[in-house]
Image (cartoon, rainbow, N blue to C red; front, side):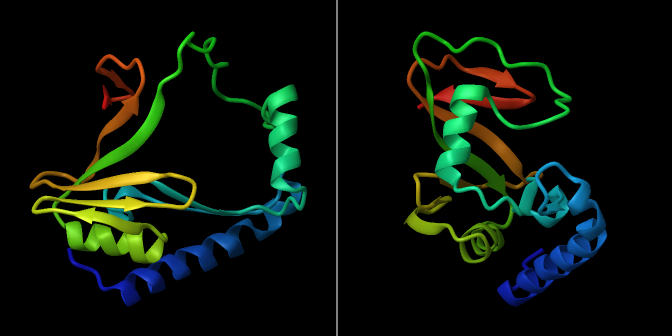
Length: 168
């Protein structure tokens, strides 16, 4: 379905307003405050997008330094602790998203979520964000969603949570 940018913005705004209203009372009780609004795969080109506004006014650099020394500030944790780091780290180069509607996905991730177009070809469009985030939109006739994560460094091909992870 090809949604216009105005309709996408209106839809995202309606979700944020509803989520803000629903979460306003819970934000004060939440350990970090703030508001969150998830966009489910049917609304986000086959992905899950979490829109969030954090109420914490501590500067990011201070929170990052604290997380480096004391671990992330989260609780209660509902996931197991991560395994030890690999001796040589791999770096995420880009996420590759398959989509039957590249134009709509381009408007969603580019116009609405701020990705700048870096390159476009016959079957792909590459978007980038400040800080180095990269997303490649690939034409695909099937269901939309993440096709693969491309890594630099030692990265033998494998599947993690159903998603292909490949060395670039």
